[in-house]
Every structure is written in C-alpha cells, then in structure tokens.
Image (cartoon, rainbow, N blue to C red; front, side):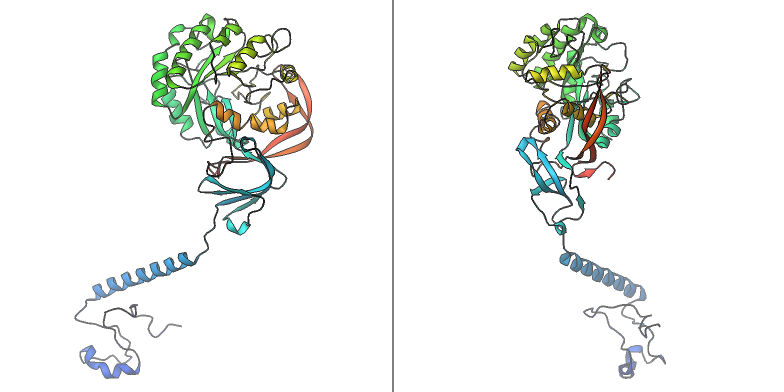
Length: 455
C-alpha cells in the first residue's frame, strides 16, 4: 500500500530546506502555499525560493550521504577476519626451520601469517581442512624447460609446475640473450607459477635440436652479460650444456665464457654434463662454490657423480669439497636408479632434486617434480631429506634462500600440500629400469603468494 508521503522527496531531519507540513497542521500554513492549499494537502512544495531541480539535486545528495553513513556504520561494526585463509590439521614440514609437527597455517595479505598447533577457524575468511596431508614450503624445481612453440624442448610450465605442486620453476637455459626478452614476456609474465631462469651462454638457446654451441660464434659473453643486467631480477645464473652433440669441441670454451659472466654478475653456473667432448674431470676444475652440476646422477661413467668403477669419483668429491652442488635433473636420459643407490651408499645424496621436464620427458619417464621426489623416496632418501632438497636447498642454490623455501611468518605464502599414499606404484628411470614403490607423493594443492593457480 502506498504511504501517504511516498510521492514526496526525502529530506533529512537536519536539512535547512523548508518542509511542507503534512496532516492537520497543514491548515495553519496556507500562506506557505501562497494561498493555494490542495484538497489532499499532500502536494509537493512549490517553493519559489528553491527550484524543483535544486530540490531533487539536494535530495539526491542527502540520500547518498545517508547511504554512505549507513555503509560506514556497517563496516565499522563488521567483524574483520584476521586471516584470508587457514589450512588446518596438516603435518607441517619446513626443514629450513626444523619444523615437523601437526599444525594450522594461517595466511594473510599473501604471506605466511601464523603457524600454531591450533588456530580458531572463525579468525579466517576461508578454512581448508588438510588433515592427513603434508604441508610444505612451495616446491622449487630448478631444472625445467618452457618456451613452448619457440623451443623444441618447451612445455607449458603452469600445467606441469603449479598444476602439480611446484610454485617456483627455474628454466634451465631454454632462452639465450637473443630471445630472453620474448621469454620474459611470453613465459614469465603470464605464468601462475613463479618462473626464474638460467640464461643460456649460447645466444640462441634451445631453439633447435642441432646443438646451440656447435657453432662457437654463439658463445657471446658480452650479449649474455647485457641480458643478465637488463633482467637481473629474473635471471639466477648461466647455463651451459656440455655434451658432444650439443657443444661439439666447444664445451670448455663455453664453460669459461659462462664462468666470466657468472663472476661479473655474482651468480652461479648450471652445467649440464653427459658424454662431454672435454673430460668431465677437466670441466669440474672450472667450477666454483655454488655452481651446479645437473644430470649428476646419470649412468656410471657418463659424466656424472658415479665413475666407471661404480663409485663416486675422486674429482666429484674434490669439487663437492669446494662447494660445487650436484643436482638430479632427471630428464629423459639422465637419471639412473643404480647411480643414486651407489651415491647414497657412499653418503653422497643429491644437493637438490629437479625434474628436467621438457617435451620429451613429461609423458614419461619424468612426468613431474613430485614423481621425481617419489623416486628418491623409494631409493631410500628419508622424507624430510626429500622435502629439504625440493624446498630449502634449491632456494639457496639460486640465491633465494631468504625469500623462498620456508614457511617462516612474513614470507611469501608459497605452499604445497601433498598426500603420501601407500600402494604399489611402478617407477621408471631414464635407463628404462622399472622398480615398484610402496609409497608415492601426490600433489593436492599449491599456493603462490597465498593464491591457487585459478584464483
């Protein structure tokens, strides 16, 4: 039913505007209407002092003011949650902080806000129960290959990285100085995964399977140095592939050029070895503390940690004593169960675990980082060590240990939630040797800066 005053403009009580009386009082105010009082005494005021347009404008402003005041009152009295997200009940493992216990993890403003045995769920805007799962710092894979459509090796990184538990991926030299601006624009910028990169010492990077260093003109330290300085925030070091069919006889020259660039920018080398032209032991002599040998756990005598006699080679031990790191870098041809077992027998575990996902490995035998971690777990590396070599240690190897690889409150909320499932699972190495694992890690959730990939 229409209110008797519903057709009148709203005027707030404290307004200075004249208001026509309504009801019996109107009979005493006929002069207000200039002697023309309507029979129903409800007609809107026609005040010669204020035009209809001004009255409507002022009324609109008054309504807006009231709405703002009501909204401000509601906001002032609303309960604002302390956290944006709360993950509850997981086994929290953070090797960087020596943490391994059941706890809740709270996230706010994209950062780790709190870790405690129990956090009240009403303090969070959103709660995700993850009881029975492992909650770790976001996984870091320091050997991947993106640039799909430009490189023959490239894959869509989000599919195989954050889509499978990896929050930070480091491209291992797919791009060289000539293409890095494009790599940044088309790979790094749009990715949900945090993408960093080792720059290839070859100008052309991996745009052809014919070998990027066979033509020594592609070894261009000045071009590499310019790219490293221009993209210092994204480039974490220099990559060199030392395999005779990729580098021909130029592998030692390429390593020395990379060494010069690395020293100029204060960042490490990542050296791919495997059937090099120059003896592996000679290449190792060029490496310094913090440099990384990837594909290090390949077949015996192929240019990895295990020599022809099936033992860790003396040259590798000397390099490790200097601080050289030895990364897994599984790939399609560079990971041997027997080599890992031989190294573990001599107390020589990998410095870091990485997948080397590329176009020829993502459908097997690699599949992804978490499958690679499961293989190391199967071979006898303790779970805590597997997590450490997939989080804290790779973060340090790319000089990001102060930013990534830990759940320390205040850091970016990069988080991986995993399940450790039991059963029988076939695992295959790069030699096509098959083993049966009784446990396997399965990715459940990955957050980068507190957000899932699709948010």
